[in-house]
Length: 252
Length: 282
Image (cartoon, rainbow over all chains, first blue to last red; front, side, top):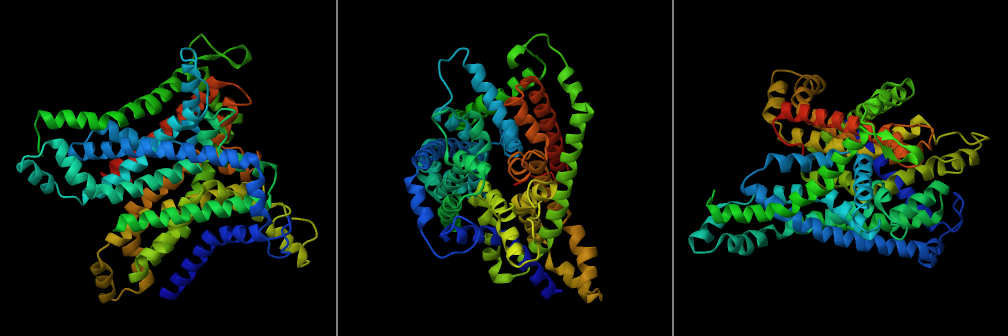
């Protein structure tokens, strides 16, 4: 049985990884067709010459960084507060936000923003995208930090309080430093989730806030292009690296 | 725990940002959607009075009922295939000793890279001028490209590919907690590996299988991007209808009614599993 299981597992691993490997290999193909014609970095050069790609990538970075900072702060504080004493409403809504279909979250946020335009003189743009991204990233941050807190003993804080620290000081100087690896891991996760999102972003983005996934989507709709292969390979390498770092940090 | 009024005040401040965000950008938007689902579509796609339940009645229109049935079927097939692929993989990982973490990371890695990129990878492989068709033509096996893309099969493939890790991780978690003494006892009593797997390991991993199935079923049911890109508009699922009502069709009340129905369903499924497991999904 052991051998069969190993073979089966190998086949499933191939299914998971081969499509991405092929995608990356063909980003180095000198031909634009799916026939191997020789090694070339032509398509990587093409990425950097496309102003639309550069602009959308920059938008994605701004959005992801801003949303990550906000979601990490809100999520960390929330996880700590919930660790002290749970709140069914808040925990329930966080879980619900995780399982809400993206398209439903997208149209609800679109409805909210459109509705707010009656009173607020603002338009869809980077800010609406950031607000939306924080909304769906908080739950991820809370889950990662909560997992870390489960292994943290409350006696350390109690000791600090006995020695005269205030509740805030106990959090700031005892718990927070211990949580740091979890916070870093959570932030990297939020960054990945935010940078990758297409469905919700496309509903709440304005004309001047196109993100990288939106441009990739539009290009993919028009048909495959080796340029998408090249961007995809870069994304996989950068974010794959981030996830590996995050795993390392979380284990430490 | 520490208790006291000072701590309670601090906790309230700590929960405030997340509360504000979840109320303002999760609960409130959905409340608006519920309200819209009860309104009437006005001229030029606007919203108007009177309040009505007509949008919900349209859900049972044969045209949309077909979409609902197809989405359910597709989500059920995705879940079944993920189970068939994922359970043995989880079993393999749980029995691989020191290499466990490495094998686990190999499952997680493609999962966290980029959903869009992973869908695009299949677009690249399956299209008429894609790798599979080009290779088959070069080998002289086929003369015209096979229609691999823009059909139900391609969408199913994309959904399985996208959500397989959701099945593997919870199943692995239950297998990992399984007491090895149980399988040893079965072996001591003369059970062969396969019957042990079927009669001992499989029933005991039911909670993980249930959690994994829900985690695969729910996003498959509400999928939008996968059917959109790999189905090319030919395989329409619930998610695509919602998107269409809010963009091209400009019938927000109807789109809102579908969303509310979908959320009601998702909520019920999650509650059902949480009740049975008395624990958390994560």
